[in-house]
Image (cartoon, rainbow, N blue to C red):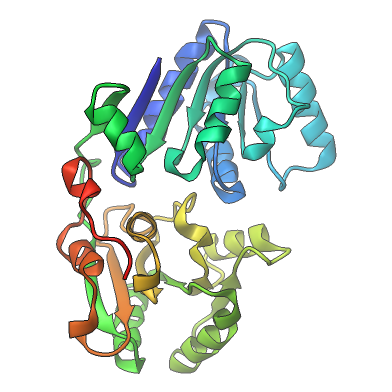
Length: 328
């Protein structure tokens, strides 16, 4: 099997993957989930521990990423080699030469569009008989062409979970008024907010600006160069701050139902897939989610891609995804 599973952000692709993994494990095989980021790998690992807590004697879970301590990492690698670990979730560390599987049966590639062809072929060449299940909310054009031409099997999840509301996307000029309105509304209903900044160099000033607008609120900064990134993300998830000012590092792997507003700075400089993924970080519970895209200048300068996001709340799949204009 080499199947692509497409579904909008939060539609249940991970649950399908976990069920496929469980069936494979019951047949005596090992399963690996390959994730593009450490945050996503960690979140899947914690979800798997919770999801399979009643069958942990059968489903023996390990994790490989830079957040894993050396002793645990070595134990997981040894377990994959001798078969005592039958379900591993990790990042590119799974592709290391020192990682050997005793009986790998299924590879699940999450956020498939984030991996290069060479990386995916590396695993296929090492394990030619395994089944592969790829997950994506924003498949790349090459993948779409293969699927639409019948060269690759594809399944699409078209219905959201019960009570899930479509995310409302709003365009607004960058300034005190828009930011006060967007963030203030969410805080007033007891929620939390993501504020996404494209450049690390701008994060500190943006955070100070937001703190000035909301002096009685707690603000946390998070980006890839933070040595204590996991601690900062966890602190925000635990409600120790109201606003997370961050880079696109939250694009994948963040599932916080209490965060229902995201504000994206300089969205015109990001790709459509990135923007859709970022938008999908909110509205994952039963509350209405909002995504604010801030533009500079007048509304007449807003490019077509941002207007598309404003009009369509769902996944772009098929011919419409292939015809979306590029960044301007």
